[in-house]
Length: 230
Image (cartoon, rainbow, N blue to C red; front, side, top):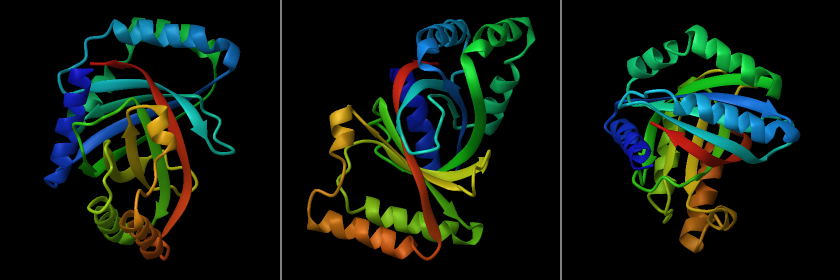
């Protein structure tokens, strides 16, 4: 877990200094009766791999989601280097990979992939096991304004966990192009998330009012970490 957090810290620290961090998500739909065997199969395979120092993987269940969001699990690969991430993903081939795919395929009803760039983050040292993503539809010309409004609200609220924002560059669904992602220490913290006083309430209101002209909120989902690999 410590190394996983260090990867995130490096990734998002780089983003603050105007460099970039990169992520690649694989979202999978698995029927309830197959969940245990599916998770065991995934864990056995990724536990056997040697991850580079600057690449990490988080395997999570998608516990809370909106209507029409069918995926139940997510594999999230992270790295501060696009080259390192791409090189690692290219190693997922050959006979061992094909054997893993053959074993895991019967459990999967659907799969989709997305990738993107992190541009700004806060509280990098406080990455919790519960993660929530808010997805937005933002035109490219309005991205700087979206990041600016995110920065304004984060400088006002006292959020204890990690929070970051960035762009979805591949695997865009229904126009969703940008995200805000935050983590919590436990489900209770996630359930009680919200403005704690009038100043925070005003900051949230200002964010949605300011972005209403160019950012359309699409959906949110919450995931719970099963295991990290690094």
